[in-house]
Image 1 (tube, rainbow, N blue to C red):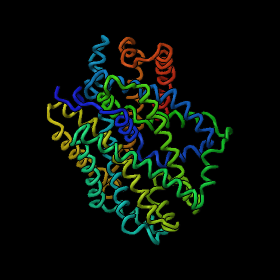
Image 2 (image 1 turned 135 degrees about the vertical axis):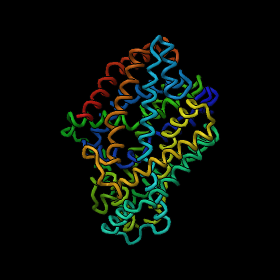
Image 3 (image 1 turned 180 degrees about the vertical axis):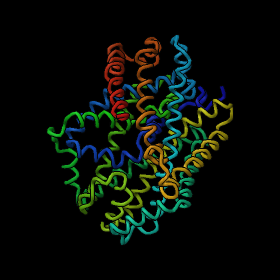
Image 4 (image 1 turned 90 degrees about the vertical axis):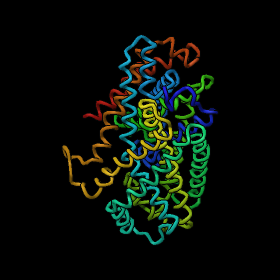
Length: 449
C-alpha cells in the first residue's frame, strides 16, 4: 500500500511521539474548560475523581488505540481491518477506523474556524494589546468578527496552510520538527504566564477555586463530568492516535507512552487554570462564560493589567500552538487514509485534505452570519457539526475500539504488542473490558438523551 501510515514512517524518538500526541490531545477546550469544570465540581475533589477516571478509562483506551495502530501499521481503517483479520475476525471492523477518520474530518471543519479566530486575535494582540478594551468593546469586536465572513475565511485559510505545510513535509521533517519546537514553547509559555500571574492578583483565588476540596459537590453528575473529561480530553477515537501509533517503532513502550501523554495532558489543563483564571478573578469577570472567556472576557483583563500587551501576545501565541498541533493530529489521520486509499503521495494528499477542509469550513463560517437562521431540527450547520462527533461519533467510535481490543482481538496479539508483565496486562485488559466499555457506553447514552 502507498500510505503515509505505512511501516516506512516512524517516530525517531519517544520524545517526538510524546510531543506529537500531547499536542494532539491538548486542544483549545483544555485551556478554559478543564479548570472551569474542576472549580464547578468540587476543586481538588474533582481532580482526584478525574485522575482515577483518567487512569481507569483514558489510559486503557489510549493504549488500545495505539496498539491497533502499531499492529496494523497503516491508516486507521486498514489497521483495524488487518488486526481484525489477524485475529480471525471480519475485515468489516475497518468501518471503526473509518469512523475515526470521519470524526477527525468533521471536527476539523469547525475547529479550523476557531483556530482562525485565535490567529486573528493573536494579530490584534500584536498590534494593539487590546489597549482600551471594555466589556462592550470586547463584545462588539467578537460580534464584528462573526459577521465578517471574508475575514474569518482568510484566517481559517492561514491556519490550515500552516497545518498543511507541517503535514506536507512528512512525519520526521514536518510533524516531528514542528512539535519538537512548538510543544516545549507551549509548556514554557504556560509556566511563564502562570508565574507572571502569581504577582498580578487573583492567584490565591485560583488556588482556592482549583484545589479546595469540596466533597459535598461530588455526586453522580461529578462522576459523569470526570468520565467525559477523561475520555474526550486525550484525543481517542479521532483517528489521530491510531495513526500516530502506526509510526511507533516496536522498541517503544506503548504503556509508558500512554501514561506520559495522559499525565502531560492533565498537567497542561491544570497549568492553564493558572494562566486563565487569576486575571478573571482579579478583575471580577465572568468565570462561567465558556469559550467566550477567551475571546470576550480575557481581552478586557489584558487591557487592565500591567504588561497586558505582552501577556496578550504570549497568551494567544500559546493558544495558537495548542490549536495548530491539534489540527495536525486531526488532518494527519485524514491525509494518511487519503494517501493509502487513492495511492497518491503525501504532498498531494496533504494539499487535497487542506483544500477540502477549507472549502467545507465556508459553511461553518457562513453559519455565524449569512445562513445563521438556516436550521435542521432546530440546529444550524455548526450545531450539527459539533453534535455529530461529540454526541455520536466519538463515544461510539471509542466504545467500538474498546470492545474490539478488549473482547474480539486475540489476547496473544495484544499481549505481544504491549510486552507487559502478566499482572499489568491482566489489569489493563480487565479495565478496558469492564470499566472503560460501560463508562463510554454511559457517555454515549447520556449524549443521545
